[in-house]
Length: 296
Ligand SMILES: [Zn+2]
Ligand SMILES: [Zn+2]
Image 1: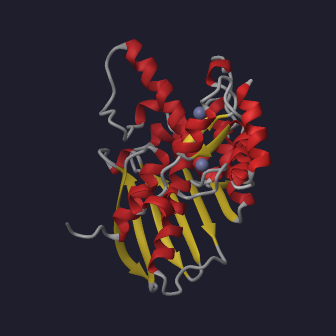
Image 2: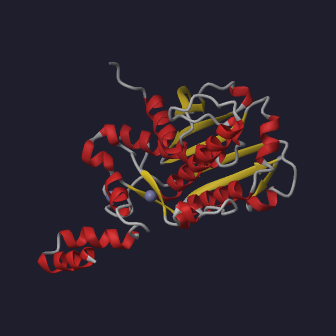
Protein backbone atom coordinates (compact mmCIF):
# COMPACT_ATOMS: atom_id res chain seq x y z
CA UNK A 1 0.00 0.00 0.00
CA UNK A 2 1.34 3.39 -0.90
CA UNK A 3 1.90 5.92 1.87
CA UNK A 4 -0.82 8.51 2.23
CA UNK A 5 0.13 11.94 0.98
CA UNK A 6 0.19 14.89 3.40
CA UNK A 7 -2.97 16.23 1.72
CA UNK A 8 -4.77 12.93 2.35
CA UNK A 9 -3.66 12.84 5.98
CA UNK A 10 -4.85 16.42 6.55
CA UNK A 11 -8.22 15.70 4.89
CA UNK A 12 -8.56 12.44 6.84
CA UNK A 13 -8.03 14.16 10.21
CA UNK A 14 -10.44 16.98 9.30
CA UNK A 15 -13.05 14.39 8.25
CA UNK A 16 -12.66 12.39 11.47
CA UNK A 17 -12.87 15.51 13.66
CA UNK A 18 -15.87 17.07 11.94
CA UNK A 19 -17.82 14.15 10.47
CA UNK A 20 -17.98 16.00 7.17
CA UNK A 21 -16.24 14.06 4.42
CA UNK A 22 -13.60 16.28 2.81
CA UNK A 23 -10.86 15.48 0.33
CA UNK A 24 -7.61 17.35 -0.06
CA UNK A 25 -4.92 18.07 -2.65
CA UNK A 26 -1.55 19.78 -2.41
CA UNK A 27 -1.52 22.93 -4.52
CA UNK A 28 1.50 24.48 -6.26
CA UNK A 29 3.71 26.43 -3.86
CA UNK A 30 3.26 30.19 -3.66
CA UNK A 31 6.22 32.27 -2.53
CA UNK A 32 7.97 29.14 -1.30
CA UNK A 33 5.02 28.26 0.96
CA UNK A 34 3.23 24.92 0.84
CA UNK A 35 -0.47 25.21 0.01
CA UNK A 36 -3.32 22.72 0.30
CA UNK A 37 -6.90 22.78 -0.94
CA UNK A 38 -9.79 21.01 0.81
CA UNK A 39 -13.42 20.63 -0.21
CA UNK A 40 -16.41 18.47 0.78
CA UNK A 41 -16.31 15.16 -1.06
CA UNK A 42 -19.10 14.18 -3.48
CA UNK A 43 -20.22 17.73 -4.09
CA UNK A 44 -19.66 20.19 -6.91
CA UNK A 45 -17.05 22.56 -5.49
CA UNK A 46 -18.85 25.50 -7.11
CA UNK A 47 -21.91 24.70 -4.97
CA UNK A 48 -20.21 24.21 -1.60
CA UNK A 49 -16.99 25.71 -0.27
CA UNK A 50 -13.23 25.33 -0.38
CA UNK A 51 -10.62 25.65 2.33
CA UNK A 52 -7.18 26.87 1.26
CA UNK A 53 -4.40 26.15 3.75
CA UNK A 54 -1.04 27.92 3.75
CA UNK A 55 1.98 26.78 5.69
CA UNK A 56 3.87 29.98 6.41
CA UNK A 57 6.96 30.74 8.44
CA UNK A 58 5.97 29.64 11.96
CA UNK A 59 2.32 30.10 11.01
CA UNK A 60 -0.62 28.34 9.43
CA UNK A 61 -3.51 30.01 7.68
CA UNK A 62 -6.87 28.91 6.34
CA UNK A 63 -9.19 30.72 4.00
CA UNK A 64 -12.73 29.41 3.58
CA UNK A 65 -14.61 30.59 0.52
CA UNK A 66 -18.02 29.41 -0.73
CA UNK A 67 -18.17 28.22 -4.35
CA UNK A 68 -19.16 30.36 -7.30
CA UNK A 69 -22.71 29.01 -7.39
CA UNK A 70 -23.17 28.74 -3.64
CA UNK A 71 -25.13 31.99 -3.26
CA UNK A 72 -28.18 30.24 -1.79
CA UNK A 73 -25.95 28.50 0.68
CA UNK A 74 -24.41 31.81 1.78
CA UNK A 75 -27.90 33.26 2.22
CA UNK A 76 -28.88 30.31 4.42
CA UNK A 77 -25.72 30.64 6.55
CA UNK A 78 -26.85 34.21 7.22
CA UNK A 79 -30.18 32.86 8.47
CA UNK A 80 -28.77 30.10 10.66
CA UNK A 81 -30.80 29.41 13.82
CA UNK A 82 -29.94 29.87 17.48
CA UNK A 83 -28.22 26.51 17.80
CA UNK A 84 -25.87 27.18 14.85
CA UNK A 85 -25.13 30.70 16.09
CA UNK A 86 -24.29 29.47 19.57
CA UNK A 87 -21.95 26.83 18.17
CA UNK A 88 -20.29 29.32 15.82
CA UNK A 89 -19.78 31.92 18.55
CA UNK A 90 -18.42 29.34 21.00
CA UNK A 91 -15.95 27.90 18.51
CA UNK A 92 -14.87 31.36 17.33
CA UNK A 93 -14.20 32.67 20.83
CA UNK A 94 -12.44 29.45 21.91
CA UNK A 95 -10.15 29.61 18.88
CA UNK A 96 -9.41 33.26 19.58
CA UNK A 97 -8.70 32.49 23.22
CA UNK A 98 -6.31 29.80 21.97
CA UNK A 99 -4.29 32.40 20.07
CA UNK A 100 -5.85 32.23 16.61
CA UNK A 101 -6.99 35.20 14.55
CA UNK A 102 -10.46 34.56 13.19
CA UNK A 103 -11.87 36.99 10.65
CA UNK A 104 -15.43 36.82 9.37
CA UNK A 105 -16.07 38.85 6.25
CA UNK A 106 -19.70 39.27 5.15
CA UNK A 107 -20.70 41.30 2.09
CA UNK A 108 -17.19 42.77 1.96
CA UNK A 109 -17.06 43.97 5.59
CA UNK A 110 -15.22 42.43 8.53
CA UNK A 111 -17.41 41.57 11.53
CA UNK A 112 -15.60 41.15 14.83
CA UNK A 113 -18.86 40.26 16.45
CA UNK A 114 -20.63 37.56 14.46
CA UNK A 115 -23.98 38.54 15.97
CA UNK A 116 -23.91 41.85 14.09
CA UNK A 117 -23.33 39.98 10.83
CA UNK A 118 -26.58 38.07 11.32
CA UNK A 119 -28.58 41.29 11.35
CA UNK A 120 -28.06 41.68 7.57
CA UNK A 121 -28.79 39.35 4.64
CA UNK A 122 -25.63 37.55 3.54
CA UNK A 123 -24.62 37.82 -0.13
CA UNK A 124 -20.94 36.89 0.18
CA UNK A 125 -18.87 35.51 3.01
CA UNK A 126 -15.29 34.59 3.66
CA UNK A 127 -13.66 33.19 6.75
CA UNK A 128 -9.96 33.49 7.58
CA UNK A 129 -8.11 31.75 10.38
CA UNK A 130 -4.47 32.27 11.26
CA UNK A 131 -2.18 30.99 13.97
CA UNK A 132 1.25 32.53 14.28
CA UNK A 133 4.29 31.90 16.47
CA UNK A 134 3.91 28.13 16.39
CA UNK A 135 6.55 25.47 15.79
CA UNK A 136 6.06 24.80 12.09
CA UNK A 137 8.24 25.16 8.98
CA UNK A 138 11.27 24.13 10.99
CA UNK A 139 11.97 20.87 9.25
CA UNK A 140 9.59 18.68 11.25
CA UNK A 141 7.17 17.46 8.57
CA UNK A 142 4.94 15.71 11.10
CA UNK A 143 4.50 18.88 13.16
CA UNK A 144 3.65 20.81 9.98
CA UNK A 145 1.00 18.32 8.91
CA UNK A 146 -0.42 18.17 12.46
CA UNK A 147 -0.79 21.95 12.65
CA UNK A 148 -2.32 22.13 9.16
CA UNK A 149 -4.75 19.32 9.96
CA UNK A 150 -5.87 21.04 13.16
CA UNK A 151 -6.37 24.29 11.27
CA UNK A 152 -8.31 22.40 8.58
CA UNK A 153 -10.55 20.70 11.18
CA UNK A 154 -11.21 24.01 12.95
CA UNK A 155 -12.15 25.83 9.73
CA UNK A 156 -14.41 23.02 8.55
CA UNK A 157 -16.07 22.93 12.00
CA UNK A 158 -16.74 26.68 11.85
CA UNK A 159 -18.42 26.40 8.46
CA UNK A 160 -20.19 23.14 9.26
CA UNK A 161 -22.12 24.64 12.18
CA UNK A 162 -23.53 27.27 9.80
CA UNK A 163 -24.55 24.91 7.01
CA UNK A 164 -28.17 23.97 6.46
CA UNK A 165 -28.62 20.25 7.05
CA UNK A 166 -29.64 19.37 3.48
CA UNK A 167 -26.22 20.43 2.24
CA UNK A 168 -24.31 18.27 4.62
CA UNK A 169 -23.38 14.73 3.77
CA UNK A 170 -22.30 12.72 6.73
CA UNK A 171 -19.28 10.46 6.51
CA UNK A 172 -20.32 7.72 8.86
CA UNK A 173 -22.08 5.09 6.86
CA UNK A 174 -24.91 7.47 6.05
CA UNK A 175 -24.88 7.66 2.29
CA UNK A 176 -27.01 10.52 1.06
CA UNK A 177 -30.33 11.40 2.62
CA UNK A 178 -33.42 9.26 3.04
CA UNK A 179 -36.67 10.27 1.38
CA UNK A 180 -39.16 9.62 4.17
CA UNK A 181 -40.13 12.49 6.47
CA UNK A 182 -39.72 10.46 9.64
CA UNK A 183 -36.27 9.28 8.68
CA UNK A 184 -35.39 12.85 7.77
CA UNK A 185 -36.04 13.93 11.35
CA UNK A 186 -33.80 11.18 12.67
CA UNK A 187 -31.00 12.09 10.31
CA UNK A 188 -31.30 15.77 11.09
CA UNK A 189 -31.02 15.04 14.78
CA UNK A 190 -27.97 12.97 14.14
CA UNK A 191 -26.48 15.76 12.08
CA UNK A 192 -27.07 18.21 14.86
CA UNK A 193 -25.08 15.89 17.09
CA UNK A 194 -22.37 15.80 14.45
CA UNK A 195 -22.15 19.57 14.45
CA UNK A 196 -22.02 19.62 18.22
CA UNK A 197 -19.26 17.06 18.01
CA UNK A 198 -17.28 19.11 15.45
CA UNK A 199 -17.67 22.24 17.58
CA UNK A 200 -16.69 20.42 20.79
CA UNK A 201 -13.53 19.03 19.17
CA UNK A 202 -12.58 22.45 17.78
CA UNK A 203 -12.96 23.89 21.28
CA UNK A 204 -11.69 21.09 23.54
CA UNK A 205 -9.39 19.10 21.25
CA UNK A 206 -9.16 15.32 20.92
CA UNK A 207 -7.49 14.43 24.22
CA UNK A 208 -9.63 12.86 26.96
CA UNK A 209 -10.30 15.45 29.67
CA UNK A 210 -10.30 12.76 32.38
CA UNK A 211 -7.21 10.64 31.74
CA UNK A 212 -5.31 13.06 29.44
CA UNK A 213 -4.08 10.13 27.34
CA UNK A 214 -4.08 10.70 23.56
CA UNK A 215 -5.39 7.47 22.01
CA UNK A 216 -2.69 7.65 19.35
CA UNK A 217 -0.01 7.41 22.08
CA UNK A 218 -1.47 4.09 23.20
CA UNK A 219 -2.45 2.36 19.94
CA UNK A 220 -0.47 4.30 17.34
CA UNK A 221 -1.72 5.88 14.18
CA UNK A 222 -4.80 3.63 13.92
CA UNK A 223 -6.31 5.44 16.91
CA UNK A 224 -4.81 8.92 16.41
CA UNK A 225 -7.38 11.62 17.12
CA UNK A 226 -9.99 9.04 18.15
CA UNK A 227 -12.32 10.57 20.72
CA UNK A 228 -15.94 10.46 21.88
CA UNK A 229 -18.07 13.41 22.88
CA UNK A 230 -19.95 13.17 26.17
CA UNK A 231 -22.97 15.31 27.03
CA UNK A 232 -22.53 16.71 30.53
CA UNK A 233 -26.19 17.66 30.46
CA UNK A 234 -27.81 14.24 29.93
CA UNK A 235 -29.42 13.99 26.48
CA UNK A 236 -32.63 12.80 28.17
CA UNK A 237 -32.88 16.17 29.97
CA UNK A 238 -32.44 18.15 26.76
CA UNK A 239 -35.78 19.34 25.47
CA UNK A 240 -36.44 20.23 21.83
CA UNK A 241 -35.69 23.93 22.44
CA UNK A 242 -32.44 23.37 24.35
CA UNK A 243 -29.45 25.04 22.70
CA UNK A 244 -26.29 23.07 23.40
CA UNK A 245 -23.28 25.11 24.48
CA UNK A 246 -20.31 23.03 23.27
CA UNK A 247 -17.97 24.74 25.71
CA UNK A 248 -19.87 23.85 28.88
CA UNK A 249 -22.24 21.03 27.86
CA UNK A 250 -19.83 18.76 25.97
CA UNK A 251 -16.54 17.10 26.88
CA UNK A 252 -14.17 14.86 24.89
CA UNK A 253 -13.65 11.48 26.56
CA UNK A 254 -11.68 8.43 25.45
CA UNK A 255 -13.80 5.28 24.97
CA UNK A 256 -12.64 3.87 28.34
CA UNK A 257 -13.48 6.94 30.43
CA UNK A 258 -16.69 7.43 28.47
CA UNK A 259 -17.75 3.87 29.19
CA UNK A 260 -17.00 4.33 32.90
CA UNK A 261 -19.01 7.58 32.96
CA UNK A 262 -22.10 5.70 31.79
CA UNK A 263 -21.72 2.86 34.29
CA UNK A 264 -24.06 4.89 36.45
CA UNK A 265 -27.28 6.73 35.65
CA UNK A 266 -27.00 9.71 35.98
CA UNK A 267 -23.44 9.41 34.67
CA UNK A 268 -20.36 9.90 36.85
CA UNK A 269 -19.03 13.45 36.70
CA UNK A 270 -15.66 14.27 35.16
CA UNK A 271 -14.13 15.02 38.56
CA UNK A 272 -15.38 11.69 39.93
CA UNK A 273 -13.69 9.82 37.08
CA UNK A 274 -10.46 11.80 37.57
CA UNK A 275 -10.58 10.85 41.24
CA UNK A 276 -11.00 7.18 40.31
CA UNK A 277 -7.93 7.40 38.08
CA UNK A 278 -5.88 9.18 40.74
CA UNK A 279 -6.83 6.77 43.49
CA UNK A 280 -5.87 3.80 41.33
CA UNK A 281 -2.27 4.96 41.75
CA UNK A 282 -2.55 6.22 45.29
CA UNK A 283 -2.51 3.11 47.45
CA UNK A 284 -4.97 1.18 49.61
CA UNK A 285 -6.47 4.08 51.54
CA UNK A 286 -8.13 5.58 48.50
CA UNK A 287 -8.95 2.16 47.11
CA UNK A 288 -10.96 1.54 50.25
CA UNK A 289 -12.63 4.87 49.81
CA UNK A 290 -13.65 3.88 46.30
CA UNK A 291 -14.85 0.48 47.50
CA UNK A 292 -16.97 2.14 50.16
CA UNK A 293 -18.51 4.51 47.67
CA UNK A 294 -19.22 1.94 44.98
CA UNK A 295 -20.78 -0.43 47.52
CA UNK A 296 -23.71 1.88 48.18
ZN1 LIG B 1 -9.88 8.84 29.23
ZN1 LIG C 1 -21.67 10.19 27.25
